[in-house]
Length: 279
Image (cartoon, rainbow, N blue to C red):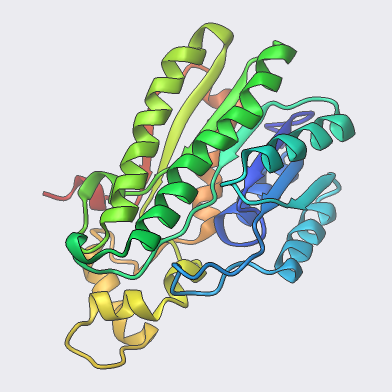
C-alpha cells in the first residue's frame, strides 16, 4: 500500500524509538522524511540520549524502503534550528504535508515539591515548548503550500492520568493535549488536521534503560532491574503486556497521517492497552 505516497513528513526525535518507527512506517507507505534529533546528553534524563550512530541507522532504515530522508542534528528547544531543518527539507523535497512532534524526555521520579528547577525546566522546554517550536517551524510552510495536511503531537497517557512523582512529565504532556486541541480549531479552515497521540508504556530506551523508573515502580528493592519491574508494568495494563512496541504507535500515526482519517481532527488517540480507561 501507499497511504501517504508523495507526501513529506517532518519528524522530531527521529534517531530511535517511536520517532524512527514513525519515519520507517511512513516511508514504507510512500513518504519522504525530514528528521531531527538533538543527539546530545541531557543531565535531567536518567537514561542515555540518542546518538549520531542511531540517527545513521534511521537514515539507512528509511532508505531501505526506497524513500528519501534528510536527517539533521537539531534540538526542539531551538526554534531557529527547526526552521532551518524544515527549510532545508522543503528545498530538497519540494513540500511539507505532515508534522509528527515526537521528541520528549522524562526525568527522575520524585514528589512535586522536590523536583529541581533544572529538571522542571528541561522537561517543559523539550516536551511542551519543543512541540510549539515544531509547530512554529512547520505550519507556515503548510499554510503557504495550501495542500492541507496532518499534524500529530505526541502526548502520553500520563498527561491524562497524572501518575504520582512525575509532575514535570505529566504537566508537559497535558499541555500538549491543550496545544493540539487549540491548534485543531485554528487550522481546520485550512484543511490541516491536528490530533494527539497518547501512548501508554512503550518499550523504548526511556523505559527499558531507565534505572530511576525501575526504582519508582519497585521501591521495595534497593537496585531493581528491568526484569524486576516487568511484573509491575504488566499489572498496570488491562491487556496484560508490560509495554507496547514503537511500531504499534507508528500504526496509529500512519492512520492519522493518511486520508483514512481525513475528517478526524482535535482528537486524542490513546494507544495504551486501555489503561487510561481504567477507573
